[in-house]
Length: 155
View (cartoon, rainbow, N blue to C red):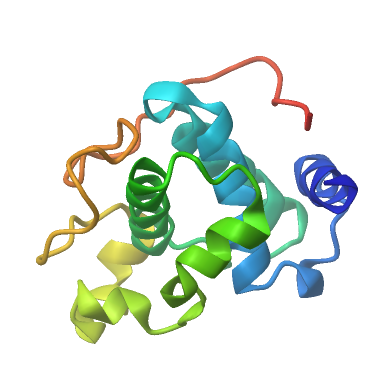
């Protein structure tokens, strides 16, 4: 739990070493936001924080709207399917496919994910992602970015 708080704090403060923010760390932080943002609000807050993080790291071009949105939808669906799992290691153990780097290719053609459009804005998946109970994030809905004066603090 202490490591999770440190990870989220460093991410929010943009002090996390970008090299340490690998695929699993992205998922972990996104999961943390989703668990604390009912009705899809956590997704929008994570999206804003991720954009701020890559900008502060000097690599804003690394942000990919469709990959971010698709993984948020996958995580939200898995959270809806396993709401009793309150700890990241247990959640990831129950959903090991989330570790697969090629997971999104089950839902998107490679050419679409590689497109400039998909990088710039969320493109809905041609194949359904997640479940209908996906924690308030509709599959084909864009992430609504609501501006909040302060970022959430880790608990």
